[in-house]
Length: 126
Image (cartoon, rainbow, N blue to C red; front, side, top):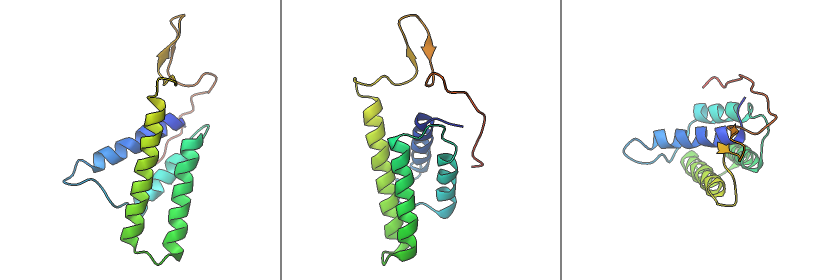
């Protein structure tokens, strides 16, 4: 299992690795969509970020079947929306009004994930 935060970092890392090429990625293929969906399915407590990403993927898949747009145009739009969602998420967690994990509370306890959530070792295949 993973947290929403884990998923956000995983997805950001995917885009950073893809950007290591000559140009930032504009396209996404079916195997990458499948991998993202597998990761969405192992999130323990989805939040607004995860719900947003899931909705973007669902809309993309519906448009892919019923749109006059080319696959290239759809892929570019999907990547743009996912990157914007990541930018919103990371802006939120770096705001001084939030406390991103890990955080040390006054009594010296280091919190590395939301309290009360069991760690379950479930992983995506990609």
